[in-house]
Image 1 (cartoon, rainbow, N blue to C red):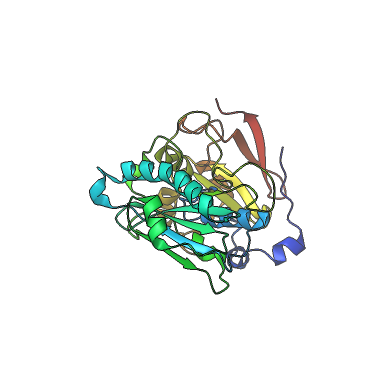
Image 2 (image 1 turned 90 degrees about the vertical axis):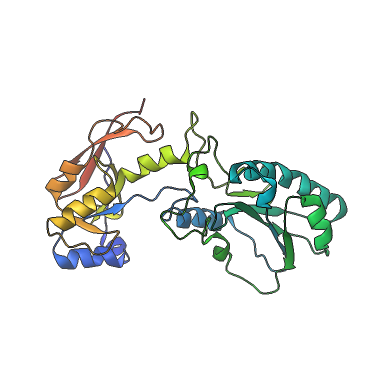
Length: 309
């Protein structure tokens, strides 16, 4: 049984939405679930905070590289991604043969049209000609410049895709059969001596092949219940329907949301919309199964009833 304490000091520094919730007279609030994923709008901040916690270095004086692909040379963006992913390792190795590159990172992004491109940060004080960079890359346009002004590195992780329509993730990414690593580093990037990061702060490796679309279906049916008795961090719950469906249903019944991500909910509604026994659709192999109940003082008690099978 898990109890989440909520001391006065924690509540005083909690989200302004939670303070507004209490002022409105409601006890609980339902918010969408934000997974640790670069691909999810609510998850990127979590990934960035992990980088901060590990000690992301200052990029002042580094070389900032952009690598693009020429769509005319590929059957589609998935093929371009696979060619580029394999070429990057060889390109960096060739650059290191001629230049003193102490450490580096690789950041994957998508254009508005859904085509892949990459950004590299090279801890290198030597000058690298763009012509040489373009020759070792060989798949499209390249650009290189020196970082001359201190920057907030969060700008690098503001987005993965520049498509502002819908969720911004193209079908080929949603259905790609393997994990697409958004951020990777060389060994020693964070000042440690561990092996090179294969995403470092990326999603955990799945037990079996699961596409991003499979993960998304699970994320849509998860939410977080927050409230004074629950504590500032809230309790993740499995939902019988997607957060969006529940949000619309409650709005149509006259429940006024605080905004598009925060819906006040009653105790009875929480018990009605949550899944109490097991994996709601059988695709999630990560999260254990819980049942939920309320204590006399209003805390949500989460009881483990068995691991997902």
